Length: 292
Image (cartoon, rainbow, N blue to C red; front, side):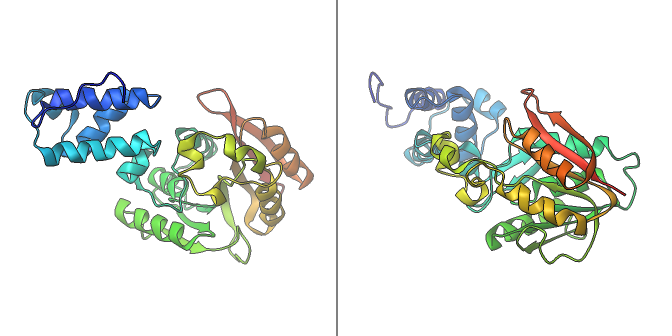
């Protein structure tokens, strides 16, 4: 590392924080100050307020080692959420595993769209989440729909185990079940709502993604085939056997894919097709209703 003074044997907390920030800045991490503060707090078991109050406290070598161990992982571009093993989504705390995507704020667009289309949130609705990962989409919906129940499907046994554990820890274990499956294949139940964030990255583009994504998210949850649309084609053919009459499907899509996914729904006979943009004004959700 260039131009960086070494730490003393028992440095002040604020000195370690500045050192951590400098390491992350040199590694071209986007938010070095924020990441350093979060990782330092987590490694020391301290809140931001505690760190401010104890800025002049001296840290021992074990404490410094824990901080710098987390920082070294971030320098290697491991996401903060992966280092901590958890991510907040829809104000809920989700544990991650190597088999699950790291939930993104953009995916909350699907929750917004789902809730906007439900006139009575106390109705006993049924929800199917295809490619459930951490279970974040299904469990976020259940947190807003007190009488709803749902099923989450994923091809990965590890993802299913992670989602099941998240449901129990968040208090939704009685209303959510998770199972290993190939999208909706073999399901006999029909649902009021199907929601899905399937793999949608064209395979040739995966290596161009940020290292935090390409090196730490599971490739199976990213790769959507040559044009990124393979999963949508499969799911759309299954939807008539998964949705109740006039039931709704909501897909997350990648930038520039909304028109193609909407076209798939039109071809399959869906009606009321529309899109919803995320906070970056990207068409992130595509939805439609199974014609009655």
